[in-house]
Image 1 (cartoon, rainbow, N blue to C red):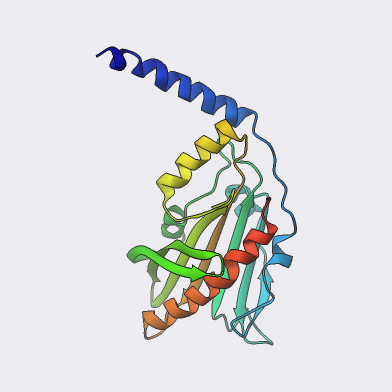
Image 2 (cartoon, one colour):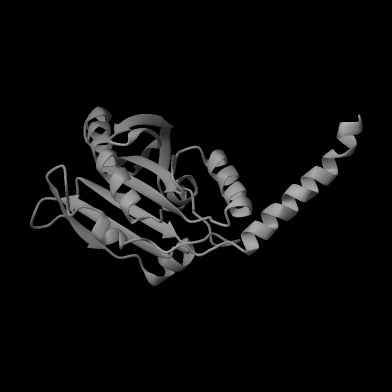
Length: 213
C-alpha cells in the first residue's frame, strides 16, 4: 500500500520528464539526401522519382522525403513493379509526427484484406516489418512498412511510441523515418511478397546510411 501511495507522483514525474524532453529535443539533420541513399536500381528495376503535392507534404509534416516508382528502364512509373516511400522527421512534436499507413490507406480508398508481420533477413540482421494486403476496386497490393531511426528498425507501433517518449526524455532525440514499400499483386501474393522482401533487404541499409548516427 505504501508503494501505491507513490504511484501518482511517479506517473506525474515521468510525465514531466517526458514533457521536458519533448520541449528541448534536438533537431537531427540527415547525413545525406534520401534520394541519393536509395539506389537508382533495385532487383533490376529502374527508379523514377515522384513528387508529393504541397498539401500532401503539409499534412504528412515530413522534413524530407523520397517517393520512387521502380519499373522498366524507359517508363518506370507507368510500368511500376513496386514503389518505395521514405518520409523523414528530424524531430517530432505535437501535430508533426510519423503517420501510420494503417490510418492513411483507408482514407485513400484502400480496404485492408489481411495484416500481419514478416521477418526478413538483411545484411545487418533480421528485421520485422508490417505486412498488409489491400484492395481498391479490382486492384490489390502488398504493403510492407516499418519505422527506422535512432538505431532501430521497428514494426510494433506501440513500441515505437514508447521508444519515442523515452528517447525524447533521455536523449532529447525523436528523429525517425517511415519506410513503406508497395508491390502490386497479380495472380499470387507469394510472388509479391518475395519481391517485397528483396526490396526490404536493399532499402533497410540504404536508409540507415542517410539517417543520423
